[in-house]
Length: 334
Image (tube, rainbow, N blue to C red):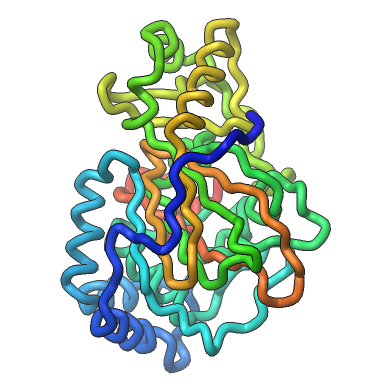
């Protein structure tokens, strides 16, 4: 769906802004994960250290994250400002396809610790080579790519709704804003959009009359990259507070009423959308079960100082995907 005028914009007004003492405490804990010879993010040993280090983060930060896990609020997002990203030590913004973080850094450690506070980090082998911490950066030549490497508008979607085990949360940490401060992370939650749907639209969205396929960011050669064998609903669960599985680019309605309902849902999302313009140190947790997200367009310069977010996925129940994870790891191989 074409992008319309975005809803309310938030700049630096976070739901929770860390005070200087808590920022310093976060950075000290993060640096303990960036020393020695065992700081490979994807290793089980390092993840175990990050999981334990979560308990050493400031109490108010941990309390805010835990409350959000219990109920993600009216918008299904939590914005925490002022987290340490070690700006003075940041290298140039990556500009290669498939960029990920394998070596522990302060921002990657912060991101992973908070993921462990919400649940367990998760990745997909067919996307970004299965890395737990992924770079969201513009890539030369991929300006119109409908995914994390592009800079054109990105339509609303939940992450990996085609998969039997989509993430429960998506976390973004801003390391650098774009030059012109125009890039916006757009979000729209079902708790705001649902009242705008007609009874007929709701009924159709709860019916298994939609097929969602993998997004362009997944490897086209991967076995997982096939249309869903069984149609699914866009909305499921409690009628008054349902879960969402939808991506405007890759969700196909199978009936006329499904087509009308998906269009109606898209309009409701547009009408209730918020745009978050992130600054360095801003972290956004998105409840992927009840919130769709997208992005406004922006103009990269490819000068080493472009917009740079890091992303990780989180599941609240790692065991439910055990049959997809070899050796009980954190990467879903299929």
